[in-house]
Amino acid sequence: MGLPQLGALAASDAGLELSAGLVVDEPGRAWTQVLAVLLETVPVVLVGPLGPAPDRVARRLAAIMRRSGSVLLSATSWPGAEVRLTVGRARWEGVSGGHGLLRGRRVTVTSSGRGAAAVSRSADLWLPGPTGSVAFAPAPAPEAADVDGVGPMRGAGGAVSPRPVLRVVG
Image (tube, rainbow, N blue to C red; front, side):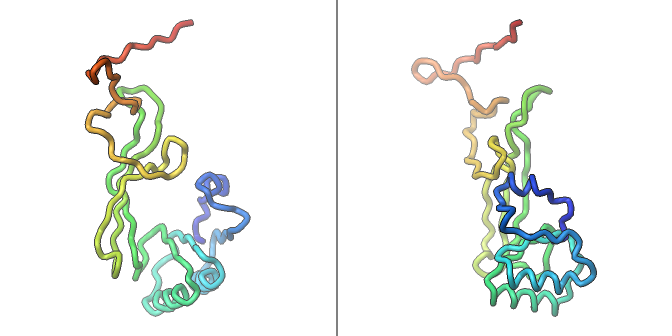
């Protein structure tokens, strides 16, 4: 809701089942009532920037979510959020020295919040990864800082040997 720039193809590629979803591009001035109806009927609601929600309205929406078991995901800051996800470090991998192909974007996502989520936690994720989807990104080995991400070649006895230079012929 309130995300007119979210395309159906991008949502489908991210794994969302389009036949089971609703899209409300512009909810208008009565967005709080539209959001309340969605939270009562849809298990997960993603919202864009909608404007400030008065405390009374935010508490009413939180009560609806507790009663219905729905989840509200906000692309912007939301008053009274139980959990906040933030992207810290972010870097693209695969291009170095002005050449190569982008393989993926490695980000560090940190969660913080209230109650059980009061202890901050971080994880490295591919956003998107080499396959185009979101995935857990294991920590790279200290020596795996290669452009192509394959790591150094190992010879007999585990010794690191230089990579052969590949040339395009023809």
